[in-house]
Image (tube, rainbow, N blue to C red; front, side):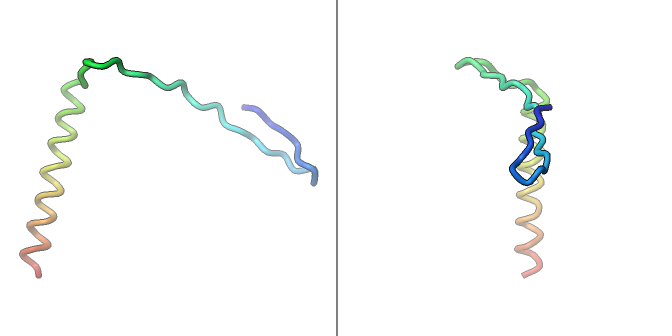
Length: 55
């Protein structure tokens, strides 16, 4: 962690960020990502149906 000192004597700490991973064109996501996307879609559709039923 990098720490600098400001004019007023206060310390300012900067976190070390992880490196980004760049996916090449054509690389596929794993099955866990697809399952998560499908689960999120089902959840959103269910919430929309419940909201429509209530109103």
